[in-house]
Image (cartoon, rainbow, N blue to C red; front, side, top):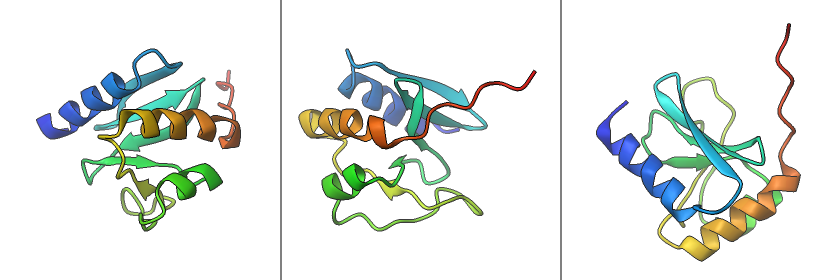
Length: 106
C-alpha cells in the first residue's frame, strides 16, 4: 500500500478521534470499524470507500456506487472526508445499519 493510502488512513482516524472507531491494515489496504462493525476502507483506489446504507446515501448523495476492487460489492466514495462534523455524524448514524461482526470460527 502506498504512502498516500497511509496518509488518508491517518486523516480518517484524526477526523474520527474520540469516537468508538478503529482501523487495521489488511491485505494491502485499511479497514475501518465503528463499534466493531466495518463501515469502510481504503482499497485499490486509495480513497475512503464506505458501505452503502440509507445514511451513507443521504450524506453522499452525489457519490456513485463502485466496487473498491474487482469482484467486490459496490461501495460509495467518501466525498466528505474534509468535513469533520459531517463525517463523524455519518459514521455514527451508519452504525445501527451495519451488520454485526461475525464471530471467529474455531
